[in-house]
Length: 95
Image 1: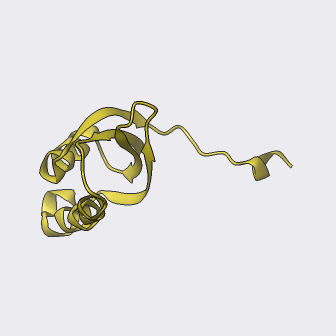
Image 2: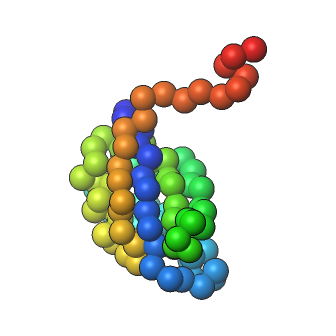
């Protein structure tokens, strides 16, 4: 199944609100049958140089439409980009 990196820019949120978004994401995936093929692998939450809260999330999904539907239900952010992952590398691959 294709894997995607989703770049999100979040509305201003308190730390507790941002933590709640993770739980909401899991709940949306679990409670809506159309999202059953999606797997949320992990996310990196960062503060951009412009002071905006961003996240970079890795999901497996059959298509980007499901990812966008999930994002709409999650709310409080804009999807800046969805990139299909061609592969993964790490420093240990080059020993």
